[in-house]
Amino acid sequence: MKLNEKEVEILEILQKDARFEAADIAKMTGLAVTEVADTIRRLEEEKVIVHYATLVDWAKMDNFTGVTAMIDVKVTPKRGVGFDEVAERIYRFKEVSSVYLMSGVYDLSVTVEGKSMNEIARFVSEKLSTLDSVVSTTTHFQLKKYKHDGMIYTSKQQDNRIVVSP
Amino acid sequence: MTVTKSYIAKSVENMRPSGIRKFFDLAATMEGVVSLGVGEPDFVTTWSVREAAISSLERGFTSYTANAGLIELRREIAHYMESRFRVRYSPQNEIIVTVGASQAIDIAMRAITDPGDEIIVVEPCFVSYAPLVELAGGKAVTIGTTGETGFKLQPEQFEAAITSKTKALLLCYPNNPTGTQLNKEDLQLIADIVKKHDLLVIADEIYAELAYDQDHTSIASLEGMRERTILINGFSKGFAMTGWRLGFTCAPVKISSAMLKIHQYAMMCASTPAQYGAIEALQNGMTDVESMKKDYRRRRNYIVQSFNELGLDCHLPGGAFYVFPSIQSTGLTSEQFAEQLLLEEKVAVVPGSVFGKGGEGYIRCSYASSMAQLQEAIKRIGQFIDKRQMN
Image 1 (cartoon, each protein chain N blue to C red):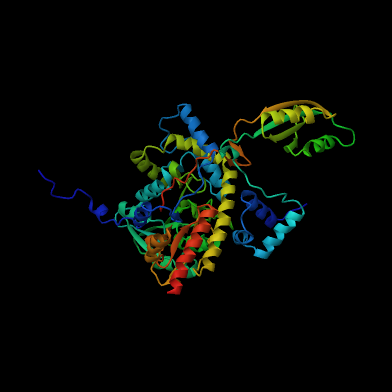
Image 2 (cartoon, each protein chain N blue to C red):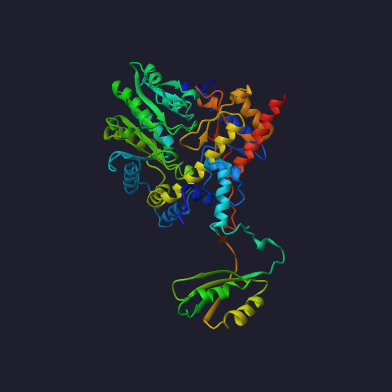
C-alpha cells in the first residue's frame, strides 16, 4: 500500500500520542478536520492503524505480582507454510503478547505475560514446548522495565529551562 | 576612606537592562506558569552527543584546544556549512569556534568597529545586538520592520538608513522574535545595496537549521557576498545544545584573523568537552535534528492557527521557534498584555516591545514546548481574551 505524505504525517503524530483529536491534528498539519477524520477512519479500516492502547506502568501498583517473560523458541518450519503455522498456533494463546520471527540462533521470540512465574512456567512446559514443531525453548524473565515502545518508564526528566529567556 | 564615586564605566551605566529580565523575575516567583517565553529548545541534547562529551572527559581530553577550536570540529563545520548552505570556508583559517553565537557576535563587532562607526541593526531583534555594538564603541542605528511586510527588511528602509559612517548591516534570519525568514530574492535586494555602498554584513544565522517550508539561504552564498559577510551560527538551537555554549563564525581570512586576535586574548578557546560533543552532533546528529524539526513544524502550524482563531492576527513564520502574534485588537500595549496575562492566567510570553522598533503591539511566543503545554497555553489565552470581550 502506498501512503501519501499526509497519511504518513498523521500516522507519525498518532504514533507519538494517540489521544490527539482530529481538530488538533488538523491544525498541526494544515489539513481540514474532515480530511483528517476521514484519513484516520480509512487507515483504521485498512488496518494500517491496528489498535490504540495505553502504556501502563503496573510496577507502580502496590502488590503487583505480574511477570513478563521473553522466550526464545526454536521450531521446525513446515513445507508450504514455513514458520507461519506454528507462529499462529503460538500467538493465539491469550497469554502471548507478542511473537516475532527472528534471524539468528533461534526462530521465534515470544513474549508471555502471566500473573506469576509459576503460571508462565506452566504455560511453557504444558502449552509451548509440547507443540509438535517446537524444538526447544529458553525462557528469560524480565526483572525491570526501563524503556518500552520508545517511552522511558523510569524517566526523571523535567523541564530545567529558565521560565523566560531571550 | 569611603567610596565616593562610581567605578562603573559610563557606557555600562547608560546601558538599559534587558526588558526580558523583568518578566523573568515576575514569572520565576509564580507557581504553575505555562511558559511560552523560553528562547531555547525543549528537547534535551541527543544522548549520543552527551555521551560523546562524557567519553571525551573519561579519556582525559580536558586541556585547551587551538584558539580557533579543534581542527576536527572545524573540518566538520566546513563540511556542514557547504553541504547545508552552499558556502565554503577553510577550516584552517576561516572558521572560529566560539562560546555560543553570542560571543561570536561580540568578536565580530569588536573586530570591525572603529569609534563612531554605524552598524545598522534591524529590529525587532535579539536583545543583545545594540548593546554589543555600543560596547564595541560603535553606534547602533536601528530600523524597525513591521507586521505589514511580515517583518521582512525592506530594501528602501535599509538604504535610507545608510550614511557615510555606516560600516555594516546586522541581520538575523530566521528571526528571533518574529520567526521571519528571508528568501533568496529578498536577500538579493539587500545584498545589492550592501555591495553598492561597500558595506559588510554580519549574518546571525543561528536559526538557519530551523526553517520549515523552504531551506534557509545564507546571504554569504549570493554572488559577491562571501568576501563581505561574517556568518554566525552555532549548535544551540538546531542541535538543542544551548547550555553547551558553542557557536562559530565563518568569515574571509582577513576578518577571521582579526576576530581570532580578540578571541585568543578574551576567551582562549571554547569549552573542550562541548567541542567533542559538537563533532558527534555534526557527524551523527542530523536525523535527530530532522525529527525535532518535524515536531516544531507541527507545533508552529498548531499555534499560528490557534492564535488566528482567537482573533490575534499571526503570520505563519518560516523558521526559528517563535510566532509573533498581534495583540492590537485587545487595545493593550504588549507590555500590559504580557503582564496581565501572566498575573491572571499564568502564561508567560515576552512583550514585543523589548525587541525594539516594530515590536510594540505584538508578543513573542515560543513553541519550543510540548503540544500539551501549547494546548494549555492557548486555552488560557482564550479565557484571557474572552474576559476582555465581555467587559
